[in-house]
Image 1 (cartoon, rainbow, N blue to C red):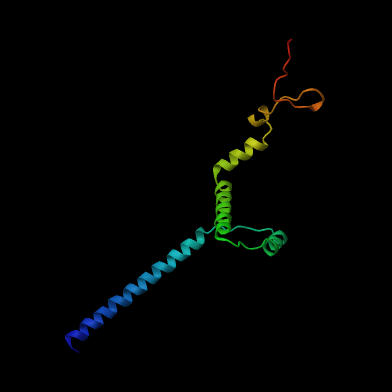
Image 2: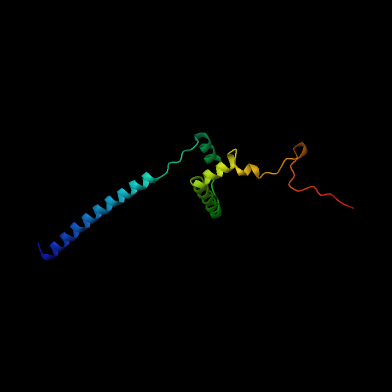
Amino acid sequence: MTLFGFFLAGLFKDTAISAFLLNRRRRRQEDENLRQWTKRTEIPVLGWYLAKHGGYPSTPFERVRGRAIVTAARWLVNSKTFEHLLGYALNKNSEMKRLKPKVGKAGVSRSWPRIELVS
């Protein structure tokens, strides 16, 4: 075997080892990504009906809009702010209930004061 053959054998050995290690690292990274993937449940009949009758986006704007709405909704629902928002809207002693206008006679709500005309 010549010197050039030894060089090629060493190059092949280094390439094989690096390919093996890089492939192992890639598989470990994929496994980590799949473990972090959040599994979202679906309502079986409703999901099927909406997928069948919902239609598909026909323009690029509809695709971007659909992605943006879904991303924003997931971001809001997965945030701690959503818990506070639900508490603000649903809790009995929430301040939101106190901000509603007072109910007048016969269940009529007024947001403007009564104006008396003086002549």
